[in-house]
Amino acid sequence: MSRRALHLQLSGAEKRAVRRLLASGLQQVRVVLRALALLQLAEGRRAPQVARTVALSAKSVRQLIHRFEQGGLPRALHERPRPGAAPLLDASQKQRVIAMVCSPAPPGRARWTIRLITQEAVKRKLVPRVGRETLRLLLLHHDLKPWREKNVVHRPAG
Image 1 (cartoon, one colour):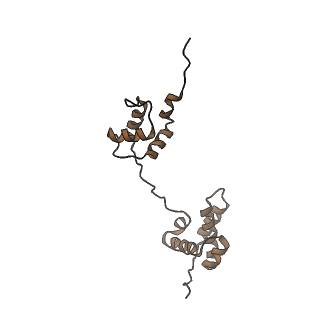
Image 2 (tube, rainbow, N blue to C red):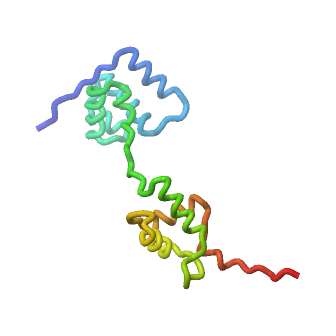
Image 3 (cartoon, rainbow, N blue to C red):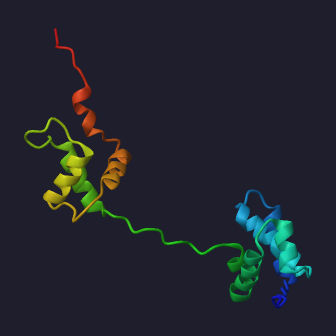
């Protein structure tokens, strides 16, 4: 049982656009491989042959054909932007945590630790909940290292 043959027709303008893309400087490897596959498919080669030549899977080549049929050349060559994860802290929450870390450590503590910052941020209701890694990255981006504050030894003056 074989798959039905998928045919792809590129117009002259589309072929020129693909060749121009290949001739232009740096491109993502994915885009270049897809462009090469499109040119070979336009020459009449079948998906398994193109897959072996371009080092893609046959499924990827078939999906490339379907994406071209759905949205044309831009859709076939480029991926849609991915949304990514939503930020865990908004700007005001970040500022409040930074202000807390810049203040003196709680009574009975010599310095701030990541665990202590996490506990205090939730306890003071600066954030509903937050992980240690999120706060560590926040402090890293602001070049804050409150756990090192007591590590500095100053020589007495005079």
